[in-house]
Length: 110
Image (cartoon, rainbow, N blue to C red; front, side):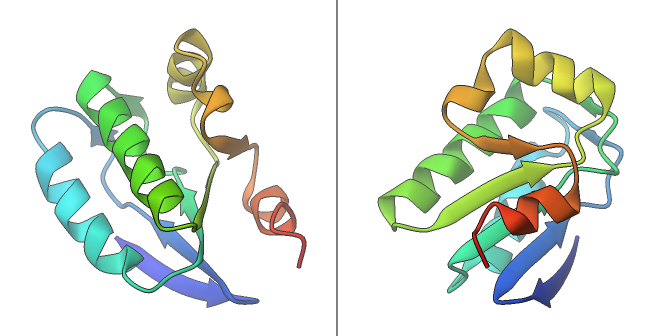
């Protein structure tokens, strides 16, 4: 995972190609370490080509954590397969999903 700061926004980019039952636990442990103290976070999914229900659950649990702590999470750059999964489960109702990084950054109103 990589992390960078742009205009007081933290952009986290997972490096794995898939987010599934084999790596979700490690993903969440690493992500939670990166999230500490971050108010506005973009999770750039550009590298993730496949996600199963456990990966989806990790996104939902991350959103819940951010909500509980009055912090903001935006997803961007989901592949077509991952986007389809998000649409099927209507993830857009609970998580802000944008098509690209620029849109994600602009969504914070900076």
